[in-house]
Image (cartoon, rainbow, N blue to C red; front, side, top):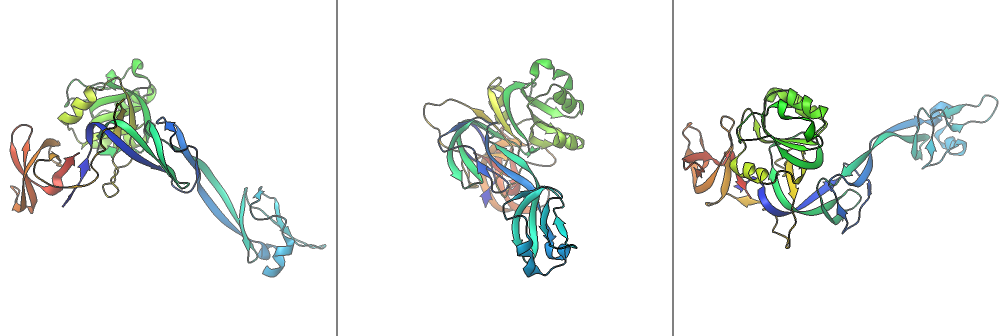
Length: 350
């Protein structure tokens, strides 16, 4: 069985692909250094196409339209601009219903492309562009620490990491979000008060990296103008020991927070990346793996906080304490406790 991977690594080399939603224009070159908020590509998105039936508007046959045209393919037109007109005392005009670009002409009709807005694609992390992907995007290489979470609100930013945590299992007090933290990315525990998001927006901060989130606050997290990454899930859950140690030892370093929406099938995870200087590039994180004895794993569950441990034995199809029959493994937790858990509840740390 292919094991899902979660990366919590103090030093690694990352390759991150950044893609536009559709064809666009690249703004960087291979070998160029980029910062997280640098725009690497842009595209016009949200375009619509409108068909104008010129033959019908002019009251002529389709074959006659070509000689009556006042515009050509590739031309920008304004609202009410004449697209075609028939001659004579009782001639008619066909005008453009809105501003747009003439993208096709034929069969007595014209196709206008309208609307659209510029979509700017940010690098998302500091690094070097190592590959251009047509007119869609780039691949960026970077070295540093990575911590992947479970949920993100789809935004990204970059700033200095400041911790509001004294222990991995505490609740984030909104009163601790004060003016000296303006422009920072804040590390906090469980969020159960909407004032956390209100106070963070008032400063404003550049991001929230939190242990867990009360489910009722999910709409506020989605609406936040800054990235929000939830590390452990919903309901009160402490940060696991590896993540807490790694983040705590990198406080006041610059950190890139990419709160992209999680998608296991596409291997997408919201993540925090801390750029670190190196004399020699470290190896990259594992990309795929199968469950084997000796792996560090995270045990996830709806009813309990995530726990770390070592997979000691694969048990095949087993009957669990709950009575469920499933492919399972024995795991020795950090506390020393031995548990039998289904493989579907395990993520490999790599």
